[in-house]
Length: 197
Figure 1 (cartoon, rainbow, N blue to C red):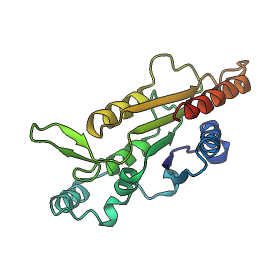
Figure 2: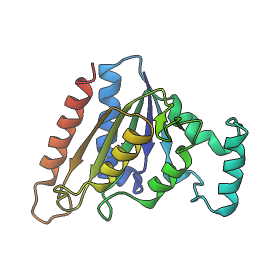
Figure 3: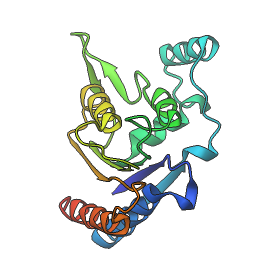
Figure 4: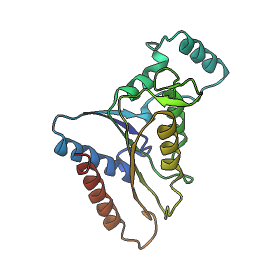
């Protein structure tokens, strides 16, 4: 099993979301000893949103099916994974803009998805599982818009079927039992990964 860990934990080692991700990676190795985990730290990548020039270049490369071009390295990496593990903090009801920028770079027609004769997209990725981890300073309630967005995109465009998330909430609320909340989320992460067997 090949796991791609898309690390959007902007605060690095101080990130509570990264703490959950490290628990997830440990649980993956424990549950699936032969699993390979590849980490992509978005904060260390030179990701930029697509603009008119890069969009035109990408379209020309897509038409030519020149998918070995460096512009498509993120999409190739994404398409080759069995499992996508995403770690991103809960910001403004979703996630940091860096993750949205990454999504632009992996959404490549002819590589991660294609359009059928009926005009509808279908997936070309090897995997079909997304595991999304997040932490929020306050309550999320039913407004996990970041996960909902990825679930909609990956489910409808790339045929992902297995999509779950774990969230630790209220981690910045004064007087809230934060450590207990994080430990509870860690147990949920372990249980979710064990259920993949």
